[in-house]
Length: 96
Image (cartoon, rainbow, N blue to C red; front, side, top):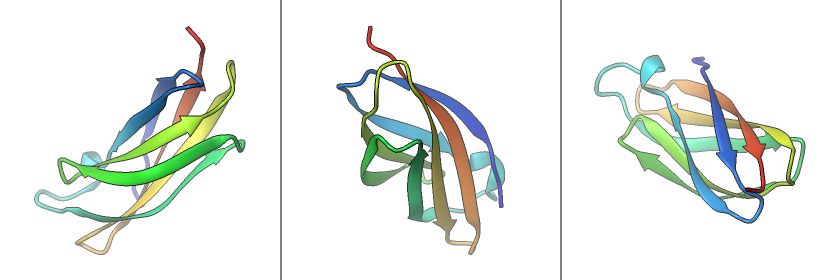
C-alpha cells in the first residue's frame, strides 16, 4: 500500500475539488480504476462524486467543515494492476 501526505485548504461554504496524486506509488501506464473509499476525521465534511484526473490522480468534491478546524482526509483507490493505494492529507478549513 502506498501512502503519501498532502495539506489541503478550503473555506467553510466552499465545495472544492480536492485532488490527491498517486503517481509515486504507481507503475508507468497503471491506471486508477475506482475510488474504494473517502473519509474524514473528525466528522463534518461531505464527499460527492469522485473524478479520476490524469489517470493517476483522484479528485473528490468536498463540502462542509467548520472554521478553524483541521480534518484528516483519506482516499483509498484501486488500480488496474490490482493495487489498493491509500493517500491522506490534512484539510484546513478557514474563513477568509
